Picture 1 (cartoon, rainbow, N blue to C red):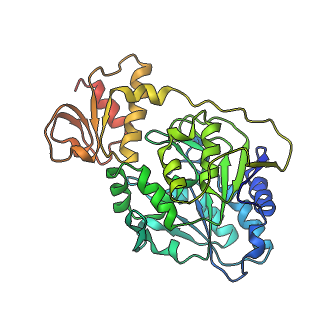
Picture 2 (cartoon, rainbow, N blue to C red):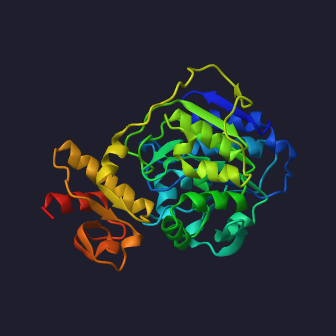
Length: 360
């Protein structure tokens, strides 16, 4: 397939989608049968794919099935869940242990992996060693929203390829530039996107929206600028897309982009992203918050809003407040200097909900 091309497969069968997109991409034709191939799904939390948070195991199984039929035997599945959850638990809950057993493909827990310092245009970053040892990388993200960056798809999915300490640092740096820099260091050979039922609001799922769409490409900037439109966003609303393009990682959607359809299906005219996350963020004062902590806050606030018990005062969250005195309410251990704060690192949504309900 060409760099400016996006393949589409419509339907509700992730296994068939994985096989057909893998086959139609043709990328595998130039790979050596002895090369080490890594598949990187999105298992950010230990939640089933039906929640809208994680990559369907059947989608990954479809790609593996096709590759094995073509004689590829050195295949791995690699992931590092977000800080606050366990990759080992995510593998089990999300159905990847069964997938591993069925296809005899090892699961690599990147949270337990060593790391290597690598150089990018904008500085040094740590990358998990197992990722750097791959000959080929297949990036298999979920098309979904994100409470801080608005979108998470191809570019941001590679954040699972770094150690937890580096994930915290990315948040202190504001996410967008380090995500772009990461993709300068780690390049996927193929991107297969699970758009079956991602959550358009939150990366941790909970409000899945049926799209019945899977798509593929080789350019992560092109994929993400296209994905942004599917969620009703402009690419410029997702800063890391433009930053990645500026680094020469890829090109954004244009009149030159070729959309190729492998089967018949309803055209996706823009699955409009819910405004809930934007509305809830109006009272939040965020400075370097980790995704797990921020998502828990967003979920708790959505519950409180439904009960008409929404807090009126600003809520502070993030590593940038660590060690400082803050007037008002804080979320997480980084805000222990606030007048009152919800404890935890990260605190669960239920804990934050009780914190506000108890009148703090």
